[in-house]
Length: 448
Image 1 (cartoon, rainbow, N blue to C red):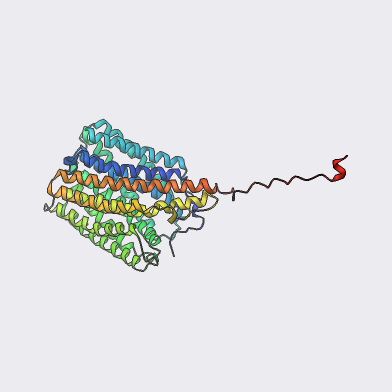
Image 2 (cartoon, one colour):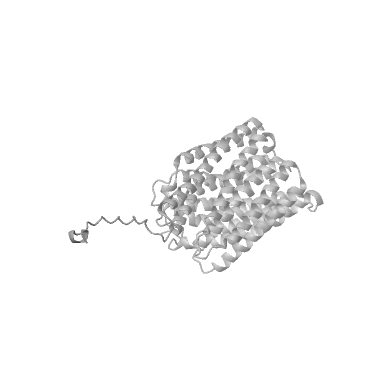
């Protein structure tokens, strides 16, 4: 039923510490994001920079969203296309460059330090380019795969990533060299290509794999996602080009095409879930379904901003912590124990089920806190009330801490299981041989 070929999948996994490091960094950055909102409530409700506002945005985008996407793609794509995973060393290099660059970039924004911004952007560019090379290699070797809708979407995501990298490097250097004729237009294009382009195409492509797998449903028919990809690619090209070149007609046409593509994608996902075998989808699909509503809503908000009816801040909230972060939290709820369970198949004498790795209590708290934080943050930017941003940060931090506890629990339970059953190949622990009973000597022997 699932498009994920699970037979032998454990042999195509990265070393378990690599995805743990990617996802762990993302969960810590998630907590740091809401901490910035608590410490700098007035700044995070305003667009512009450098400053705490851009620090919060890049903590979310580079620290949470991109880091999670890189770790997930490097792990899931080899499994779905039945290839050998990239060498662990390359995964560590990508993480070190992107994660370290992100820390420097955020610190530069917080401290208004241009050299740190430039150094952080440079390191992140190196890591993202290395990731792009690894991704292109995986895609080229996967041309014979049956993932008719996923692979074209990932190719489009790769193209967008390269454009994002170029613009991001230019924007960082523009603070000291004035390279760009219109910094604001380039920044808007950078944001659109990163959110709707790189992240958006990954979401659309892997939804054809992950949503049917998580819901235990038949995947959409091959090719059913092509209209979504065509419209989304057209819309993104028009919108990004129109923003960069100041052509309003192209921006409006791009937003219309993107809105239609979003509606088609959501309809396809709803139809897939409606035919599921798993009746109760759990807390994860509360978040996933909410994200499906937030996707077209964010495009409407973007159109209102471009028309001058709405300020940019509510659009940013609906797009980043709204659509993308909500979807990521819903997917990670299920992916973390699933991947940990697959690693127990490869490394443990006896595998452990994904359900046995789940602790529901922190998930329930996170599922309550994230929508609460999102609502408070939206109200804070609409009403320009920093105290509401503080409340949003507190609620978001509580949810992020709960999710971090959940991730740690999954890792600890998997480790405890391995220590209990032993590594693969050791077999069940054998009982020590019984001690021989003492043998009484024969009478003749006792007198010899």
